Length: 380
Image 1 (spheres, helix red, strand yellow):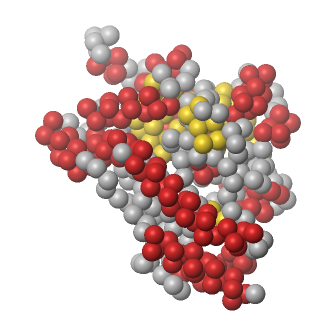
Image 2 (tube, helix red, strand yellow; image 1 turned 180 degrees about the vertical axis):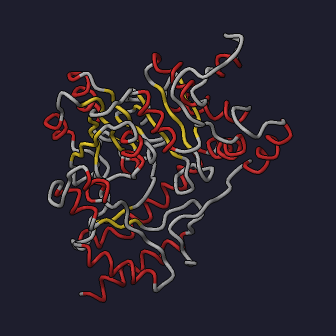
Image 3 (tube, helix red, strand yellow; image 1 turned 30 degrees about the vertical axis):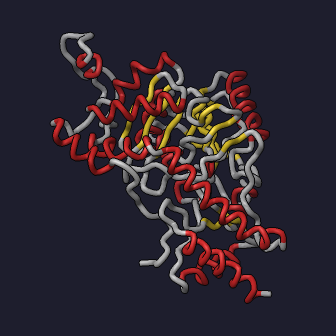
């Protein structure tokens, strides 16, 4: 155990009361009062005509892949610097991942490299909004339109962030959210699928509910329900949604608190950034962030490893992020190798995430900042 962990769950409002209320209402399985309330809240937030709650962002991505109707031999463009679910959701169908390098400033998919990766087999672009900072969605959507491609936003880290004023998750054909315990708004495990193409709503409901048309039956539109398409159990527990709704209701409060944490790190570490020993995160003018994380870029991997050890010795847990998917065993099976994505490979070896959570006190944060400063002072 660390005195200052990387992340920590928290209660900010009526979480426990709502969970008890779900039991009292007699529905803790799925699609009760709190699931509907969460869906409606997120529809208002994202501007999506329909948002379906799921057990995880992984589950939402799997639904999105099915809605894209990917088949054996199809290709999907995506970044390698992402969580495995972004690729895993479609390789089940036999589609092949086509990794494109990231931008060094945001670690998002480099929009200038996408079009040259498009082939006659390309069917979709899966973008990832890293750290709640949007990809350049306007040019990406234009490329997709020219080539007749679906766009799926992996906005796991992007809830309540925007691009030119438009909510992340509500720009592409489909968007996915995560409410994992490390995210801004959480229920331990949870997710949502934003459906921005109304023509996909009916099939999405079927895929979500085990391939059946039970939702239409529940609305009284048909006399009985049955198996009609591919699907799985992509419905969350009502208890999870009860916990989540309480957090969504406090979205402004949570965001403001996370902004305070973010800005304290920024202020405290700016002298080190000015000295050139690390690089601080930057937000493009087109983006409004949600203060999901605070990451720094160090000179190289050995420096990062040494800083991680230095912080651990002081009871502080700071962590790196993804192992690039193209260098993972599965990525290599598709023919990818070192050197294919130079920016991704370099940045993945230099990035470090500092402790970041709602209840992180100013004193604890100052201790983290002080320990980072101490590390570089000892190396000078």
